Length: 109
Image (cartoon, rainbow, N blue to C red):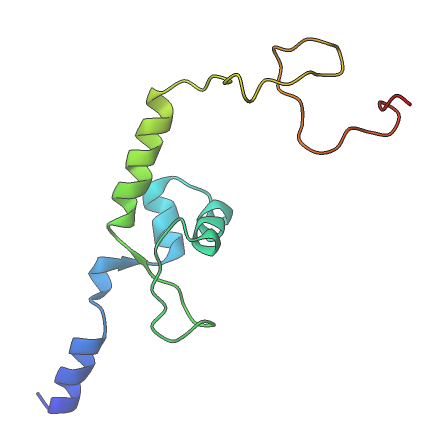
């Protein structure tokens, strides 16, 4: 083995430690668009050996993170806290109103 081959092996990550986004989708059960959004938002770690416009590799250990988050979200039921409860159009305060400004026709002068 030459010194150049040894240097390439030291710099390049082992392929089994990383997954392509398509492989990550198959193993995690997430959709490809969700994985791409998580990568864009920084929710999933990524490695791009060729630079910002080249292939994306996701560390295999990120599967554990996604599975743990999935188990946590399944185990805990979602409830609306008092800060999330707002007045709605019908006057019932049990539903959460959509975010954003109220429509002009609803505003009273």
